[in-house]
Length: 304
Length: 272
Image 1: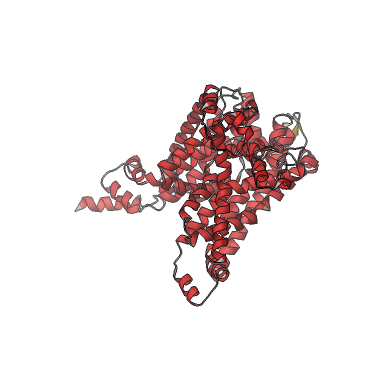
Image 2 (image 1 turned 60 degrees about the vertical axis):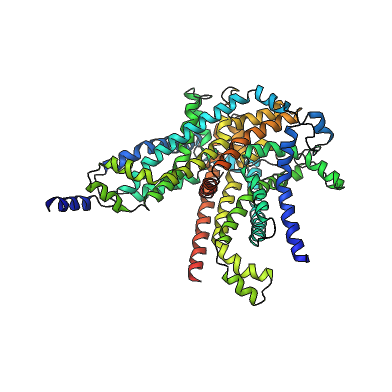
């Protein structure tokens, strides 16, 4: 009877999260930590160095002031912010389509597959495809011509007034399917009882979804908003670089292409690094706001 | 059919057509000749030709494909190994600052890659590592680790502690508990994570463009943008290249739809 007791004691000592010497867990974590320290630690440290120096001379915050008042940088950030306006549009369309699929109309499974296909394509593929699709003599305009809509056959990416909007359209085209699948999965997991009860009470389509579907989708819509917000603010490089390279002129320049251009072709690493610092700062602020909004929403949700 | 139903059906069909037409023109153009394409950009490939695919495959395409595969497999394998070890260290033991460390790692997910590109590129130039895979693999691993560690740590913490206790009673070593008990139970999150990360590396463009500039070291996605300029007078070749670049993803999707969707939802946390 001695051994089991010993074993139990040994087990209790190492129970669950044993308090072991701090050395053992560190051994497990160290390799990953080394990689993270290199990619993030070294890079962020070097970034600050580059952003505060010019030609090897320390200039303090001067570079940041220059980049902040650099008109191309302001234009680029402005375009990022304008792209954020896409958020409610894409969420609204995704929501509508998810609800329609949820109603189980004939052929809804086929529609679901079709709507998801754009999301499967790699972004650079989407970029090259639409770079061709939206040219003056591209597929979209021949389609519009075939439909008799000659007046709508525009130079989608070549016209500076249109290019950013066309870009937003392509992003919506690609990202929509993800929202539809996300919202539909949530709707399908809901109980059908409230819907049946509301129908018995004679509720119409709008009231049904406004009062039953929407409230239950609130947290997942918030999640989608954050994901797409991140995409539109700091991950649009792939779309822009492939389709327009920021042009025509600076019509579609965004923060990422501004940094990329200055780091490569313009060969002004200090300007690129300063732009990156500002972008990172803005991004952290945005992330903090998103977090606060989410917290507020969940608190309200649990209070209700 | 009443008006409401008609409106709903038309909305769905409109969305479906909008989603499919660009993809359709990509595939159909890839199977036609330049002349046929210019005559009617939307036409069906009535007399299909593989000319576009042959041209794409006789160009640098196979090389780029091989580069992408090498980069994807190596960086994802390294990431999974490092992340699994670290997640185990962060979930099995309690130690001072453990949760702070995890939060700090998770917080790194908000750093956009473009921010890291400038300093790492300068380093790459200094160490003469541009156009080599080493630096790119290291960067990919570093960028994938925060999310991977986060996902696996959350998973390990859901495993019942009694399992590990029992194994220790039976005389298992610390590493034995990890290898024989925790790992076999973690197939599902590991596959999900592999899918998320494979998709991310395969589709990554920015780092590939900056660090792999020679034609020989290009990845498929960076190659496609070079391809677009090289063949801007032969659209079918470009479209064939796009179709070829999409094929592996569609294959991955067909093999593991379940993992794929789960992975997308999980992976969406870290963006594109």
